[in-house]
Image (cartoon, rainbow over all chains, first blue to last red; front, side):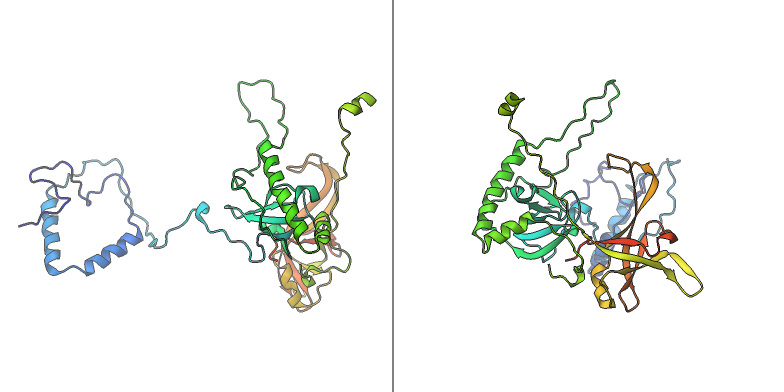
Length: 248
Length: 128
């Protein structure tokens, strides 16, 4: 009389089927989503279907493996867990937003770090949410670099970046800081010489590529002379400069 | 000597350009207080040029620093040379009153001897 379900094993075999009611030695947690789904599906069942399920449960009860006499761990009372309805994202999946005032070609003022006060050109937002920026290197010594948008003031000055190639290989991994300190190793008695930072050829190549195009774009812009001088100069506050009254 | 020069190009030692002031000047006027009790965890700052409460909106959340000198040199992390200059970092949390004063909380409470002295209000974290 019992209707055969796909998962039900062939008659007589006890092997594969592991009933869900068996509480083993692992802790089982049911996600909030599943609880809600189950409640919804129960709602939609007819009387016949419910009867079927009951019968199936009865037949399956005989297949339930008996619990071992002395379980390895006694299941303590499971703490009341809140229904986890929303899936929590890990940090790398978070959405990174850039301020609306920062668009490719904007001139930014760096507020902190070794290049503080310098005016640089914003190229692209990186996947980590940091900003890819370049001096150009010839103008103010700022190379292709990552910068956090919180340490930056976006000015209203723009440079049209049409025709400036921004290589895709220049990303967070490429621009990551190199760890120069040699790791302590037990076998080495003599300490190795501290590695000095050298600029890789790749970086020089990309820098040249981007900068030549960028400088050309700057020279094409209106008031090119002013723009060049602007990027070469540094920002600073003087006596009567109040940032809350300034339009950047 | 001249031979060396002809072989290796003389590298011009370009002096690194120093930026000017990148912070706003402020004065530490006192701790948050009622008439007879004071709470040292919150400092009151008066920022230069800010005279009305609506003007303080720009400075909310900005980091501020109290910089002072000590007698003994100390080695700071990530810095090469030990130095006599020390900092207490903090941030601007909310406005205080109608005339542009501002409240700030520092990592360690400011010393009372700092009252009337200079505090630097940085321009970061920037929201512009």
